[in-house]
Length: 66
Length: 241
Image (cartoon, rainbow over all chains, first blue to last red; front, side, top):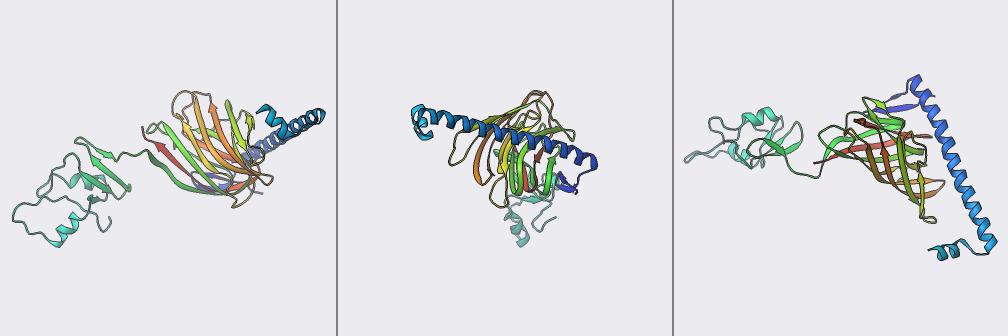
């Protein structure tokens, strides 16, 4: 599969080197995005555990902290 | 040369017969010239007006209106000037613009209008057609209708600036503005902007603040996306000093 790049308005296929560089970059960024999403999920879960312990909802907690 | 272009700005004297051609010239307000050479040759000759402060003109080759300040022709004052006219890209994993940041302006605005693509959009600055991939720091403050206050610092690392996510065609995501401040100065370049994005069916609104700390004098930029190539347009403006 040829990936496309556009330079100064001209669409063209990436060179082999450009494509290899892009695919390396893409792999790294997708891993970072996944890690970030997981971290957000972990944080949300941890928050819920605390809310469950004290027996209030997230909206009630927001009222208290607001 | 267009149908309204003229090669002189006539000066009439008492008793001259005003022809239809003369009248047509007079209804050019301002006078229209093919370019600067014909503009400069149109004043001061026999039967021509003397160039003086306040004179206006339109140049066909540049599509601009100018005024004469008594010493030189100047652009009409405006807040911004078009640097790179709307430029299209199609299913592009990356797109780059070279030589758009110059010493003519200090600060620039990029308007991005994606109509298709998916993934995270990021931005790198570049000089001499080479992207810089280090020393970026940026924060995205973003929200959805159910969780309006979120933020992420260096969301996708320090090798570029994270701009926003987009995931589908024609939902309006991947659309926004970003200002690039002092890219040509030999010190840090800062960026800030606002984008609409989407991810996993949720609508996201992003405010972006970024910085590249090198003393590099950048002359261009590259946008990248992590999944499906982008289709859309970008336009670059310079803020007049």
